[in-house]
Amino acid sequence: MASTLQHRDNRRQFAELFDWAEGLPSLFTMPATLRGVRIEEFADGDKYVVRAELPGLDPDKDIKVEVANGMLTFTATRQQEEHDGARSEFHYGTLTRRVLLPEGADEQAVVAKYGAGILEVTVPIAAKAAETRTITIEHTD
Image (cartoon, rainbow, N blue to C red; front, top):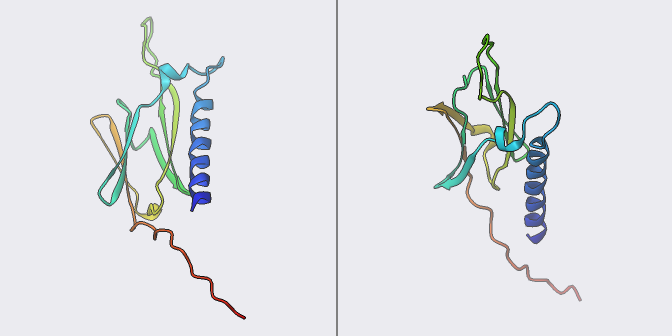
C-alpha cells in the first residue's frame, strides 16, 4: 500500500513538473504569471470535479480535454485577433494543465461542461479500494 501511495505521489509531482516547465518564460512564450490557468479540484460525493477559469474561449474550437492513465489533461488556445493601431493587453497562446485523478476514477465516464468562462470536468469515482488487511501465514510442516 505504501508503495502505491509513493507511486501516486511521484506521478503527481511529475505532472506538476510538466506544468511548471511549460510555464517557464522563453523568447517565444509569456511568463507563467501572465498565462497561467487557475484551477480548483475537489471531491463531491462519488465524483471528482476539476474546474478551470478559461474566459472568452469557444469550447468547440479552443478547448481540448483528454484523459489517459489516471491523468486529466486540458489544453486551451486563445487565438489573436488582428487590430490595426490598437493596443492589446490580452494574452494569446496555448495553455495546458494536467491533474492526477484519484484512485478509482472512471476514465470512460468523464463529462466536461463549459459555461460563464468556467470549464468543469466531472469524473465518477468507483467504490474505494479495499483497506489493507493482514494475511495469516499457514504452517506447512
